[in-house]
Length: 64
Image: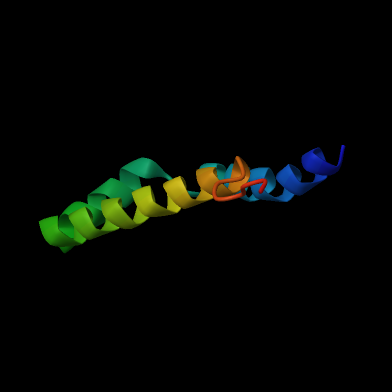
């Protein structure tokens, strides 16, 4: 139960972002800004996703 309570706030934020951001608008704005801006944006998003997944599944936690 304690694990579920830790997971719920992050899941709620992810759900809120999913419904509030429209991908077509975002992609259009990125293409208007330029290719390098799009590449930097994609890299930042990928790093954030990897970081969040590692935090969710206990990345870096070792029992010694």
